[in-house]
Image 1 (spheres, one colour):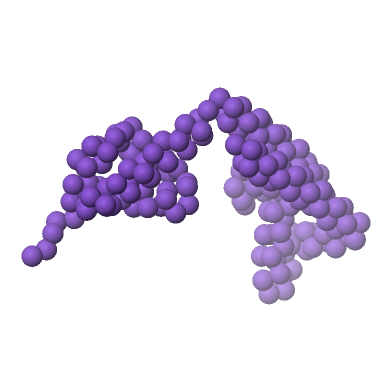
Image 2 (image 1 turned 180 degrees about the horizontal axis):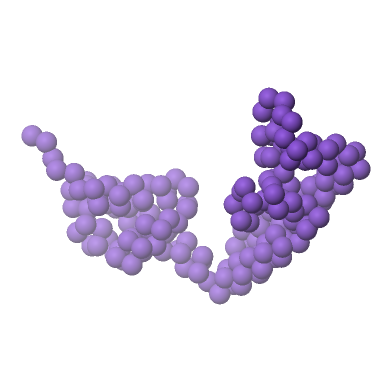
Length: 180
């Protein structure tokens, strides 16, 4: 005789097991588990087809979820998060490679609105290199623009500066995560 599987129960159990494995609070946990499960009875009622030992384990995981959410939403944590978000936004606004001197409208128009101009240039040059030789004036103009050693050195220097600033931001994030 086969049993009927409740997909909702399976999603709950999957969420519990995933949190137990990686401590990541998913949207499902925030929207379905956190507001609806508060006690062992809630778990016993919803997951009645699971063995008692598993339900006890799920309750232990639920307690850990509640602690993690409380910690995640604490005033101190929110202040650190908002500060990091502000710094990250400033970093993105002040990237050297996002400078107007790298913004070539004929290249940028082909890509998403907020793409980094150097990234768009990279894609454009890759496309040109993949094509058979062309007499297209536009491609010849782009190739001529970026054969200049000084221009290439300037791009490399700005990319390196941006990468260093991003590394610093990542370190701030890791440091804040360890403190909280």
